[in-house]
Image 1 (cartoon, rainbow, N blue to C red):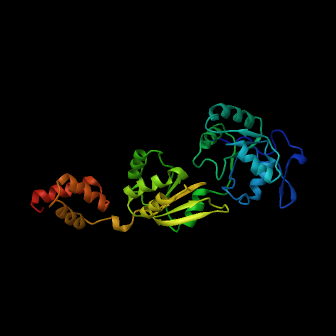
Image 2: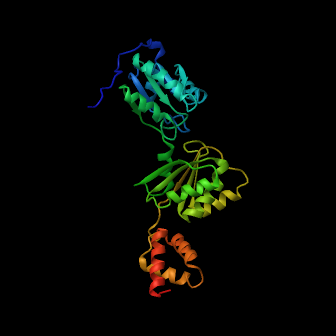
Length: 313
């Protein structure tokens, strides 16, 4: 039986009207009290204008705001003339804070959850809080808005009908290579977050595993110096390897799905194996053909054995 949600509007402490306001283009606007429960509020990923009126009303009308970094959130609140208590909630204090947050929700408070930028719960630990809030029967309200994942996807010029969000790749080359191998056959545009210092090395590792797929590096999205550089993975890797200064700001890397050319026919695989086995061992021929064709290694190995047995090589 579905659980009933607690924490409806009108419960909990009320704020004086003078405390519930925000300022837009010089106009002071009064905000209603936010919905009791946990309000998950998307914030701008760079341009402070990319926030909804509903989000501003919720932030101004909340009893408190749960923030990943209070210094970052204060800049947004100050810009819009919002004065509300800001409580830290991040991966280092989450376990300690969740019971306190649940107690405040039990008292009927309206809390707003924000991340440093974009939509909370995307590449951050906020989902654990939402999970506990739901399990305890309190209301969770989402206020949609900016997302670096979707913003990067729509400017990349790559297929958008299906995409896979990977988050950050491992920081070391061996880990990145192993993860790229796991992502190689996913039939969707890949969306990856990366940092400036690691971008060139990551592109080189991805090019080595995924081949010359079309890709885009989207940097500083929605900000003054927004940049989107498009090309194949190997071209982008070469460009950033030659850059004297490492790229700054938030970076979203988008990679096209495997092309139809990767789906080789059995006849193509057999022909490639026959040619490769003229100058290489069976093991090396299988490895080379599997990598070039994109076919599973075990399938190529089975074809190689069949050709050898039939004397076709």
